[in-house]
Structure formats: C-alpha cells, structure tokens
Amino acid sequence: MASRGNRARSQPVDNTISYVQCDGLAAMKIVKHCHEESLNNMEVAQGALLGLVVDDRLEITNCFPFPKSDETIDEEEYQLNMMRRLRQVNVDNFHVGWYQSADVGNFLSNTLLESQYHYQTSIEESVVVIYDTQKSARGFLTLKAYRLTPQTIAMYKERDFTPETLRNLKVGYENLFIEIPIVIKNSALCNIMMTELTEMVPEEEGTHFLDLGTASVLENHLRCMMDRVDELNHEATKFNKYQQAAIRQEQEKHRTLAKHAQENAARIAKGEQAVPEEEVNKLFRPIPVPTRLNPMIVSGQINTYAQHISQFCSQSLAKLYMTQALQNAKENKQ
Image (cartoon, rainbow, N blue to C red; front, side, top):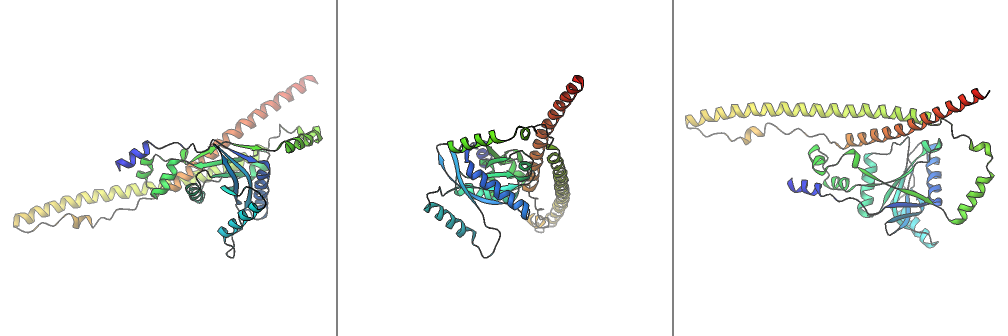
C-alpha cells in the first residue's frame, strides 16, 4: 500500500499533445451527424475521428459515424472497412479518437470513461470530442476535446473504486479529465468563401447579439443540476449507511472477542485447549464497500453544470445591464 501511495505522489502530468486542430470539414460532419440523431430519435451520436499527430499537435482531418446498434453489423469490421476505403481515396485513415454528442453538457458517464480508457491505452494520443447539440442550437458552439488524466488511467488499471484506493491514487471528480484546447482550421479557399458569405448577410441579421437565448439553456442546466444533486444525496445516504453498519459490526466484533478472551482464560484455567480467534473472525464477514465511482461521476457532472450556469449567468446579466442602458439612453433622447 505504501508503494502505491508513492506512485500516486509522483504521478506524471499528461503532456502527450498540446492542442487539437480540427478541419472545418470534420467539424461540420460531426455537427450534422449529432443534430440528425438528436432530431430523429434523441439518441447519443458517436463516431470515429481520423487524422494524424504532428509534433505535439493532434490533427483531425476527417470522421465517420458509428453504425446504429444492430446485431447484424460487426462494428469493428465496419470501422476497418471504412478506414480501408478512405485510404484508397488518399484520405487520412489513422484512428485518433472518437466523438460523442451531449445534451445540456451531460456527457460524463461510466461508459464514456471506459471507452476513452480503452482508446487511450491502445492509441496513446487519442481524444474524445464532445459536441453539445442543445447549446449549439441556441447559438453557442460547444465543441470540446478531452483526455483521461494519468490518475484516472491508473484507477481503471487497478479496477478498484473503493475510497481507500481513490485516496491513494489522488483521484477526484476535478481530475478525471483534462480538457485539450481545440481550434478549427480551414483552407485559404474556405476562408475566402466565408468572407464573401459574411458580406452577403443582411445587416439586420447580425443585430441579435442582445438576444437572451441563454434563458432556456440556463433553465435546463438548473433542472439537470437539481436531478444530479438528488442523485448525489442518495449516494451519500448509501455510503453513510455502510459506515454505520461497519461501525456496528466492529463494535460487536470487539465485544465478541472480549467475551472469547474470557472464555479462553476459563478454559486454560480448567486445563482445556483454547479456541483460536479465527473461529470468531469467521462470524463477522466484511461488509462490501460501495463503489465510489458513480458518486465521483455525479460530482463531476454537478461541477460541469455549475461552471456552465456561472458562465451563462454572467452573459445574461451583462446583456440585461447593456439593454437597460440603451433603453434609458433612448428614453432620455426622446
């Protein structure tokens, strides 16, 4: 146990890649796939990211969606066929990660951690790109890249999610993931075309910067945060019950051992053989410790919601004060 603690204290920092560079084509394909899935059946959209690593930069140049859950389709064979066909048309076919859609910032889950762990242990530079469909639909493009921290990888290698192990590895909800900066890059021709399209947009179309579109997003964040707080409270109640049961069992064990010691003393005084303590220990089986992975994930979700709420509140307040100043100036002018 001491060696494990020493390893946790000297845990290296993940500096495999500095930032992610995503081509505009790949970003648009991710956006299109995620919105199609959310509109059709409200399912989570997932897909593979293709590209290459240049120095400390991960370039995402293309992507393709994963097939929908169908027993007749072998997902692994499907991905290999897709990469093989892309290679035939001179498209980057190296697997560098995967993407997933999210709804109101809710992406952190045990399934996502497991998937990213397998990706990152097989492909060291791989990332997971999260696209938030609802926030983007309200005008806030949300495209973020994440990687597991070395502490989280060590935790999944241990496959032990007890409080003692998490404390020794120094794993908490705040260091499950590390966010990698992501930039979108287009070719010079694409930039020229977008500049021309910008000039073609009517002026009145660009005057909605004071629109309080954050209201619905903020409301959904608050609803989701309340649900997660209730879930975390339920997990805390379960852990408190475990602690109380463990304390009661320990007290009962001490009383039984004291009584056993008195009986052994009486046996020895009579010249009889003492009963070993192992017989008493067999009566008290250790109570299974509840896993702390789910509460840690829920805490991470609450932290994410709190950050988003703080961001949108500041934006909404700024817009309200700005609108009030403009309205007062207009009334004074009249």
